[in-house]
Length: 470
Image (cartoon, rainbow, N blue to C red; front, side):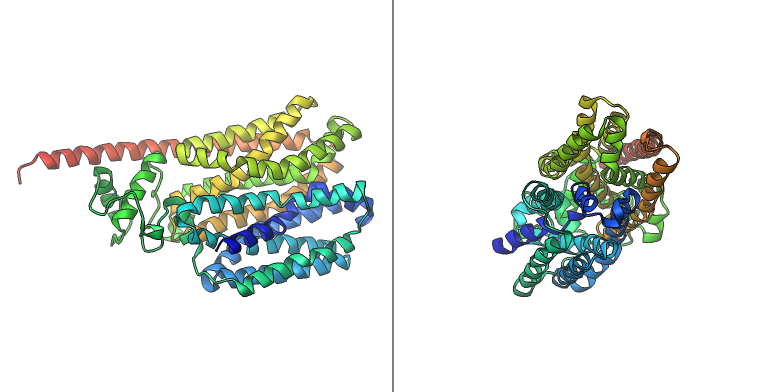
């Protein structure tokens, strides 16, 4: 098991999210005169890659649920090898797109390893997520070697890179399989319980005979959204704790049909907010050098870009504990408020040609990026439930990914209409973040207040019922 986990961390580190190291790869592409150094065409590589990464969330989840982690990861290794061959032969758009497609197949399928370490499932997921965030450092290492030691061409680099898909394939052929669904993995991460509602490893701090008042209220709440409550006492007790920790949001749409969930304000508002955040994240990664060149000069822009290249993978690792503490100790409403405020802070910092603000914005950005992605998946699991988690989360990420093509539109507009001035687009993104962030926060606040009132009424009715003579 430990060997399997180590292998998974290694191959996630070298494949899961390497396309997000685009800012480090871009100077090499320009130096090798790819697309004749055309900035817009080179940026298109990243725009399409981001779109494909997110659109793949639905098919990857479906394949994982239907055929298991082993086959899913093998498919990822095959796609990764095809991507390498494409880049070797100069088919850059196809190759970079396939690199992006391979990542989710390899990364998501690795989550099943959390089931093999029941007492440390959260740590395992954190390690895998950290490997994903740090994988962008691969192109940083390549850039440093390229400009300081020897100029290895893109073709030669990806010839050597073929070692990675071969390594992944060998690992999958000799390692045992797992058939845990995406929903089960989400449940493990949130509650520590398996698909049958029992503690993983057979151990729990919850006693089967103990049912608190909150749990008894939860049983009534479950009956309003499901004809038959088949949850174990472990599940009910775990759910009651999550209801408290989320401010009553947990379970609000559990048991509803997928069509009801997808048409709810919870889904629509989170989808719009996620779409805007994905646009601002990917637009910044693709255009950081040109933005800072406009605000400062070429030399300072290169210095800032180098700082960003190091900060991006480092921030992913550093934010692991930070993310867990916030999601475990703050309500859903508070988490959404932090997300919105942090996003606005990053946007405002990007408006000024003042180095302390620029560096503060970058530091906040590299922490915000993994926090945002984790918070969205956490929101989906808590609000919509584990049974439909894969579908709902997949739809949100897929729709946001499809809208990522607007990144190219914003980039082109900046080049052709604003004469490389990034401020108008950044102001637009700040405004949209404020609008959809406030709408989402306002809605969740009103729903939390409504849930709290209902729970107080139920507790009052329960108290009256206990006082009545038998």
